[in-house]
Image 1 (cartoon, rainbow, N blue to C red):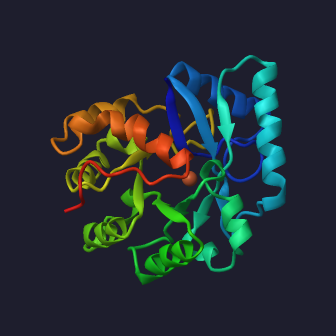
Image 2: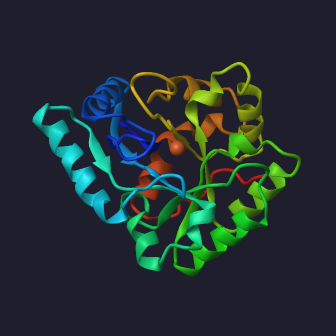
Length: 244
Ligand SMILES: [Fe+2]
């Protein structure tokens, strides 16, 4: 069974991700070579990107058709990377349409700066609609109370998705390791934007780094497989470690 990427800007020409279909195909081919079987296409749902929600199912289907035509064995699944600031303006049906694989999980992007009560409010609003929050980009918010805030959100049902590439970058690896040691990394995402540069769709380095974290190492199969599969199925997987 292959890997699953829950966070990727794979759709062509829709946000700041893949430039065109050729770029998407190059990303997809590389992902297959890295052992991936499925990728959630998660375009930015944020005021600075004009993504038309109604178009997303057609865009996902069109890319899946392109992949099939070129015999690239990768499933493209629907989703979105929903800014915490966008949650309040989206209707329940729009939020449901943006869940990962039309399940119950929203990939939630905290606003810039330290985490604040507005993130809690967004998680609460999702809960009110029967949805769970998968918090993206914890590494961008390494503030004083990050661990405490994330821990509280996890205790109430949220999960944390860490950006895989940051486990292997010298400047970011120590922070990522700290998050993992605190039990605050549950699944990985590539957050890849293009085949032409930046982060690529690969988890090998991150999984190797996580293998060396006492808390997480024994549960790598959960992180790499069981948890993302549960998320795609709209379920909340039982956690093998508690935050703290
Ligand atoms: Fe992203």
